[in-house]
Image 1 (cartoon, rainbow, N blue to C red):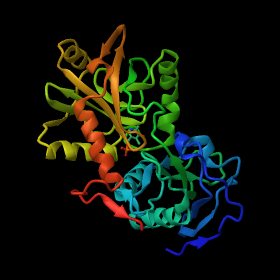
Image 2: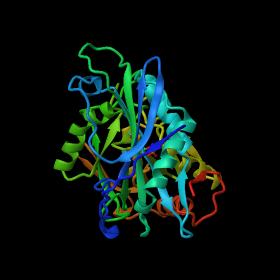
Image 3: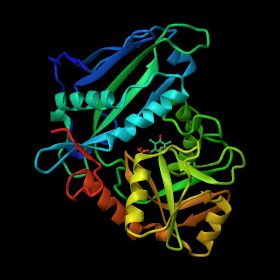
Image 4: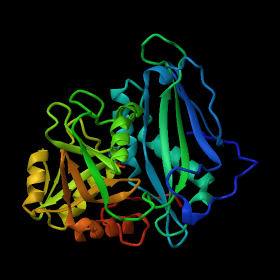
Length: 354
Ligand SMILES: *Cc1c(COP(=O)(O)O)cnc(C)c1O
């Protein structure tokens, strides 16, 4: 792919690495390319980060034809830059796009664009412990038209943000509210895709949870509100009586790269992993019986997020005294070890950028 590069002549000052937070700062450049039906992808370019102009009647603004991805670039101790399983993100975006009637970005093109942009903004990759460069590829329908039809024009763009640990208070366990009113996804819907619409529809649950003092929502299945599915932007795993349970990816759950990686690591360590439906009643009962040993969310942003409390209807279940579990900590150390190049990558997950 031919990528034109226009350097930013007015670079920003880099933020303080000890207080990056998540997604607050953007780097100096962005990648953009255009798609027109009949012509395909064209005009790939890296340009100064800034506003994108679009028609007020662009389809994305009215009918939410939009998808995105999320991954990170890591700075290793020897000054190298590496990505973690970027082809998984590329393939997932192809699947998301197919569901939303959007054209695919071929895997190699997706990775090439990311690598080119990360190299241009390499100075932005933070070096402090637990920091990384978050990469946000996204695509939206850019044809101006109010009729409800699939767009003939798209923009694929990538923006970058230096990030710290996802939660300000580190790996401290979070309190989660089980949502029994609203639903996130239903069979036949878009639950398995990373599309903005899924998030728009779940904000109300997130707001409710925050109002009641919880940091995230645990969503139940859309048909019966009976089976546990996933958290706002994370998959979730339960250690019950020594075995690991997580919802199967059968259409309503986002197939997380972190989820898949954890499952492979757990199996290698000899754990039984059950990708099976688990009812909220059985989960709460396991907690009452003292069999719910650990609960943790998995996702690129936080890697692993220990869960210290589950609130369902009037019951508050405390997990592991609201302390991080042994296995949770071990998984976090192992996966982040591979990502930052501190541990040998036995799985072939790392892709070196330089
Ligand atoms: C992105 C996302 C995840 C986590 O996926 P990763 O590939 O592990 O980052 C889980 N659930 C939802 C709804 C998501 O959008």
